[in-house]
Image (cartoon, rainbow, N blue to C red):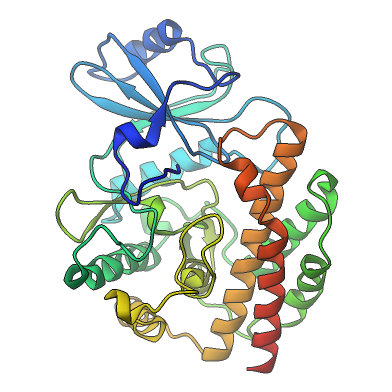
Length: 362
């Protein structure tokens, strides 16, 4: 989900359903009344402005609000838009762990209902921050908000997958090599998004420079950032983590490195911290943020490995943007912001290659 304000409200974050992404309200209401305990219409539907991959909707009834996530219509990559995996991980974490997630209600694989697979979960009230500097929070409280964001990811990385019913959620080893291969293959095969010399240099560099040791597998979110977390309405506390499409079992340090990119990237399509003074904004420095994550999880990041993980994270982000640009070209992009994201694909690839060079010289 995306928005123009630094803190999301329902009014700012949603709009009328966009052409081509409409849902038959009566058909959906009939289905939910039959499959969700306590659901009772009348139902109204608004679409969240974001949802770069999976269109997302706010469902409102007289007594409750829900969120619906669906696959987009049109030609899809085989491994993308896995709403069934999102549903599985959110449900398991909600039932077996203290990781903050919304309560799930139903997964529908009957495409006759709205045209694609979808699932429904609770809408969690709170604040979503689009800017990791938390400008709408008093400066003396920003550090607490920033570290709360770190804490929620650390809690996820402390989960033992088998104990949470997620032992089969992915392969326990080889995460980095698989991710590099997957995003490289998607980039190379999806020619609609164009080509980048920097991207191809990074694709060559990454497999030859991976860390020597792989930490024990954890549940990884895959796209953890400030705007994928819902904060308590007034407290510096994350009450729900959203957008689990890229989650799997994998290397928690790679997951953290992707999240930490906010400290290195400049503000392009979204606000970042790489071109701002974190300490002057009342935030922890990058070193303090890393130390807090290590303290909470008990994991340790070799400084040289951290530079690799940051390069890997930027590579993944460039791959995600490349996929968005491909969908724009093919006409299947579902977000009004897709064209804006697409135009920064090459810039992110250039930053990934610059970070790879920094890692090589560290």
